[in-house]
Image 1: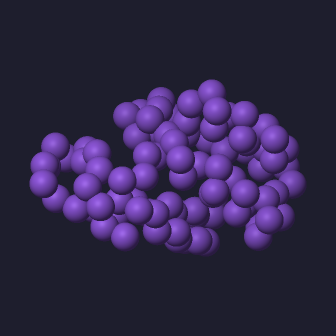
Image 2 (image 1 turned 180 degrees about the vertical axis):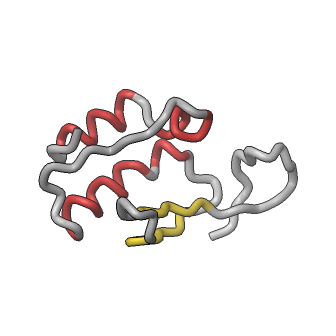
Amino acid sequence: MAAFGYNRDGKHGKKQIVIGLLCDEDGEPLSVEVFLGNTQDTRTVAAQVRKVAARFGGGAVAFVGDRGRLFAAMIKSAQIEDLGREGFH
């Protein structure tokens, strides 16, 4: 699954993988999913939202993130719409 993609550390010529990690409110891992290394962060959000809704009983869930570098790159208008379609806030 390793592939050449955007590397936040600025390292060029290195293959990487992308990992989606879901944690509970205490930071305990609930789910890990590995994506191809050239997968854009924004392309991983919908899969994680569907997983929360299907596997963990979505209900009244609010996703929280700061506007830091990583989260701002992952959450754009399309991803916010994905959250809304699943009934999340």
